[in-house]
Image 1 (cartoon, rainbow, N blue to C red):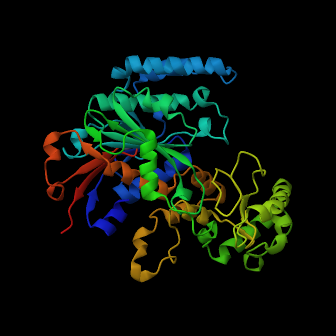
Image 2 (cartoon, rainbow, N blue to C red):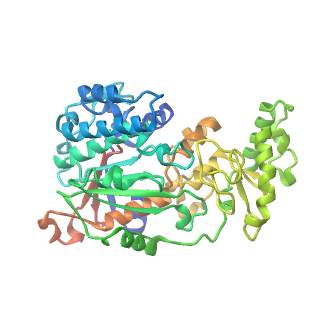
Length: 460
Ligand SMILES: [Zn+2]
């Protein structure tokens, strides 16, 4: 977003990432790489949000954790008890001296670095994609009884306590549309934050892939004021009015990988299936007419492919484009077949039946807004600046790992629109700042789970 702002509006947003956190070791590796590549190794990479509170509080919550055999009511009671404990004891449980293991620096680092370490004008922002399994149609629909509540409750208590101490100004939050933002954020944070949210996805922005999400933001009532539309319906309507576009293209626009990549995929799968070893250059790049699919798909995948083929005519685009994920049965609560690239899950084998293409891992990244193709944009536009800095590391990972990462990823076009909308409708509560000329003002912003510190500077 900062890159786009610089291109379009000519000002630089100074920012600093201070920490990230993810419980998945694969994500941790990537975050360590991001720290080295983008922050000179300064940002911390923590491994578990549950370990970011005082050890005594950690122990107390661990003792409340329900056994796997516990029934739904028992789980609900356990997580409600955790919530009460954190509300009553947050003052000491969210301890600013607390250290937790940081994989980047190989030792214990301070979790909540005080804002005085950054510029006095900076905003401190936390950005989180909370675990969606408890809320997803794909997941167990455990909702408030799902084990991910433990981490979510700890994260919420951090937001509440840091806002009370004016150590944090705002947060962004991403989850599936079924996420109970009322019960999980708006009510528990009613004394510290104004919470706003929309339901959107890249498909609502003219970007032809599905990823419906509920995007939220919380503004610290002490430091910030929401000056956008009042009321959820009005916020949603205003957001849609600005950003909503219909899709003019199908998901085929993302099928940009060279045919050698597809050939390698077919050759690898044929070997895995034990059909016969074939050199990559002799392998097919497409499955036109379905030939050779039997040699690369499992029997379950092939059965699902046959069922999807029957649906193609009813659901395809005018040019015949029809995507389906053969790891999921038609009519299951999984990814929707049709002209758009279906929602990416942590595993999946997505086919496009008209062109006979299998969607490559690199193309999944592109559909999320991460440009991994160096030759995709013409040189004179200077689009190399928009290439994803981590593309080489990510593309070097096994397919399974890339699917897992991209299936858990946020969609950049949707997230950036949401960030921009929230920033443009938020001002500081400090009346002195409101009276200054915006052009002369060095405004700001900063962020925490990714903690960033931002500062806008007028261009010269
Ligand atoms: Zn560290």
